[in-house]
Image (cartoon, rainbow, N blue to C red):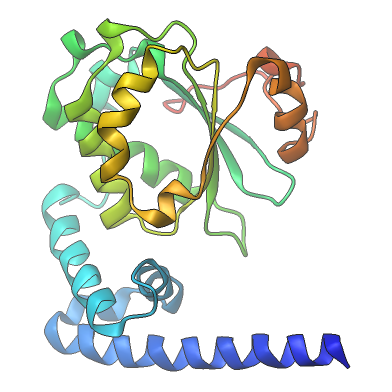
Length: 244
């Protein structure tokens, strides 16, 4: 009887959410006809990001449509547009976690403030998010990220870039991040973290996990099968740069 009640509530929640998605669609299509090209899953992500407030979610989605026309006028970011960022080999993409979410590996110690041009960096963030979203298996909408901060120091600290990347992720790719596992975190990084933390919304904060070095492999294997874990962390997959 208990399981039937749970299933009943779940069905009711899904039905209510579907009604709100339909209402949201009517609102956004009336203001921007290009919204007709978006599927219900996209609208649902924005709805969830705004705690099912239809007006706020609609405003967020309309802002996204306008932003996308400006930020990605060709519908994609080419390698040539982010060649400086790609040359630094900061981000890798391969494998999946145990739930089927694609895996990113980010090396924070390879990002240097002195080498960064802000407009290209923003394009790079979009380039990476577009790549990972295109790799989502059927039935999945989120990805998981290992953020490796080994060697991170003052020369890697770039608050403006962090906030710019966070803005793009939270406002234009809501409900795409499933989890971030931060590893090899030096104590010096926590100074930057305290500055950035207030700008992280509650939905994103809940997905960020700091892992002690001694628990590293155990925690990673809890989420990722050994066959899908990068070999640098004791798994069996070789790292593949996102540009490849």
